[in-house]
Length: 402
Image 1 (cartoon, rainbow, N blue to C red):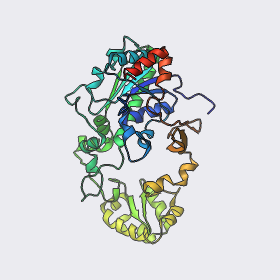
Image 2 (cartoon, helix red, strand yellow):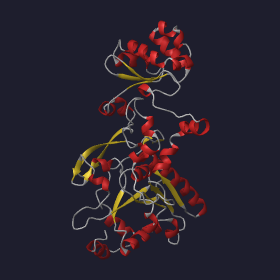
Image 3 (tube, rainbow, N blue to C red):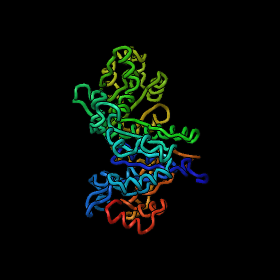
Image 4 (cartoon, one colour):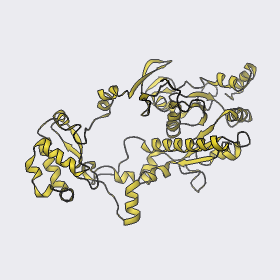
């Protein structure tokens, strides 16, 4: 990459753990920001660090998990006990040099830990303080713990997912965490742009439940304005466009999306299914929607005559169609290599560690990646940058502050 990354020169301090917050700040780190991850130090050689480091089942070494790597590429790690006056002193020195301080603590903790804008503005009036919590900081649920799966349940996702006659189901990934982390990053960047103009920072808040509810999007508006409750559909079908669903091929599944009437016409033309095209039950989208169950049976019989590869060769690029892959097939898809979405980084315990590249490209190029840091790997360097002498740093270590 010939030009510098757009966030180069910006320092973001993040008091974070697990998934949502680290996912958001990793995007910032990949875009060039210096993200300093503050983690609890080990006590008597035990514990310490982001809880994600201990999430199994796969580890590079004890308490250095592959899970952690998924959320912490390109960051620096500083161990620091924020519950001590000495730890707060280090934090305040760091805040003087920072453009933003992020956290994903429980809603009542940022004020107690002194990481709100009110607590830090005297040290750095331009600092942006971004908060990601389960339910927010200023309401009756501020002290509640909360996780992605709970938000999927309360925001209605579990009743929108799965077969109509089946049990409620969550999504297979923690998408609320990922969405909320991304939303936090957007809010942080917006406040950062304003702080560069005005010289004044502010608090930025988002929470898992707000993000989850916001992502219900058009079904929410359908209900709030028309009382229309979107339910689960067979084959994960779109609620109105038909066919826009999974269909059975001879050896697997396809997802076919005739979101526009023209795609139905393309499907009929390329397959030569004139009998289906001329069936009065299926001539228009309203007809197909009214007869979706019958259409599914007809399409299963037609697609079931050939394997998935046949249909992809015939249809890909002409109408929206995709194979339904397992995770192994998705990761081994040659297309990921072609577009550079698979990457490798060097980790102290594994050269050529496989990671995913950022989905963002700048000037046509993928963003550079570094492995997530070992616990406290950058503590000495950061303390030196803040003006602590070697003796002072050693004293902090001896007290268990870092």
